[in-house]
Length: 359
Image 1 (spheres, helix red, strand yellow):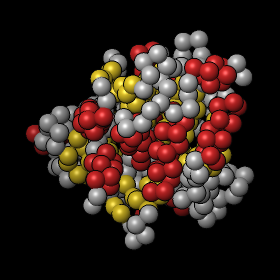
Image 2: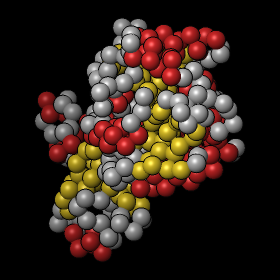
Image 3: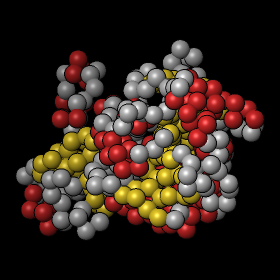
Image 4: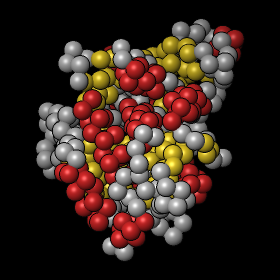
């Protein structure tokens, strides 16, 4: 496994639900440190490294987010079963019989599986309905509430999907949990690495926010900390290349490049910024896909409202099976995203940023 794949494995195998991103933050610091001059960290835990091209130039923010959708233990039943609360958006139908890990305060990962009342005892009509999360439980093989306590588990502990990073038979396809949004973390790291060797007309703050999956919370505090002139959220998007999907539901395919999001539920992207990005992509022969996400949003939705407002955009990697315990990306889309973020940053001088703001 090469260095790039090893980084992706470590990032996706790591645990980091909203509000408990410490393991991921440690990895971000480790990978950024050789390429940045200093770090900025806000009170919630968002972390950014500084790379200076021109100290008098615009401040550009490149932001993934550390957190993944997951769960929190809320109650321990007398028989040793765990009840849990979703952290982030989950579709109930993807949960039953899925393997999970409970992460204790000591860092131990205790395996379990999500269960519910078996269909064999349900009326026919009840079998046709999705089971609600409140009716599910986590079976960790404990026999009593006391045994769960002996294992160091208590309400508030993290629960995450169990899925190890896997290079698929077609090695361009990578399978893992938490691509949303460890791929954005990887883009931010790789951008720092490449910008360190380049000339560019500003100061870049590259890293990742926290608590994006529970309301874009870290985006607010991070933007207050960095005070960027332009913000780039590097995140994940929906492809339409699986059976049943239509062009009315999505425009992108895995392997066809980075998604340039011109509209989502939280942002109407500055049209001049979209035009600039498309021009840069064409000039540099970078694969890109114009797309929209009317049913979702990214940290760009908070970035563009911070301070007195700023140009902000989401550049996303298409991911199959978002917000499940396992998802798939294409390596070419990751590389295209890194290339476009770096190329765009090199174009953001004072004159261009002012032109964006006047649009």
